Image 1 (cartoon, rainbow, N blue to C red):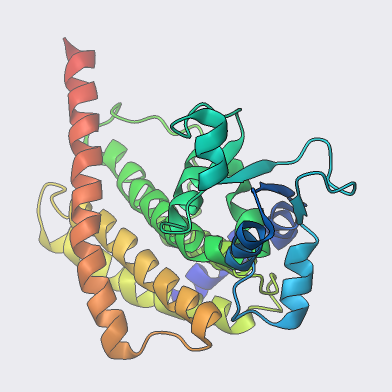
Image 2 (cartoon, rainbow, N blue to C red):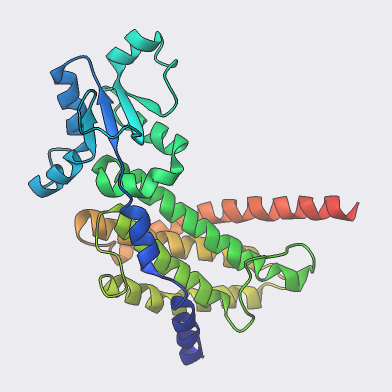
Length: 302
């Protein structure tokens, strides 16, 4: 059975191209800064290129940052960032600013990250690669999103066997492909995204240790999920199975994120703790999804 699963994972991996992730992350981004003086400009530049980054990285960051009036600034910059004091002068309460313009508050600098990502989700990956302050939140959102995708897939691929007609999956894979193979490859995609967001090399060869760890871990949580489904009658094990898919993916993502941000992954104890807390969140996510599907089913049957 293990050899069969490995073959399925290999087949699924062939459909996953890290080049797509690299291209998305390397999309050039441009940010024009607006401030009332040199001190404010310096504070904003220090936020986008913190003191802890290497000289080489700081020079790369500077290539994406422009001050207002800079002749090299692109005419269609991705973002305009205005110092709060200047924003108050221009827009009164700082809210009446042109679209694509965001306020930098030195007292709450990371509020800028939240605001930008809320408005421009499409720029999350290239912004994280280019600017260190964006990496943490983009990585966390990536981990949650892929974990949720895996939970949804684990639930959705099994539900039709219990209650046909509840779900239709336009993205369903061939029957010969097990859900474990799909979930494992999605975790590998997560590793690519986390590497890109952390300005690390992306690819199978570049991330061979992470990919090997993900594949090895697939057998453990696959066995646990199957055991649950087999022990709980009438499909009652499906919700725990989907929660396990969420938790296993989340714990793997957190360990990879730690590796890229600090140079080492989670210890076994830390991974177990992360898995436990993620399992609780996974139950909530899966429960909400299941309730929504049940409600949709009830409406359809009326």
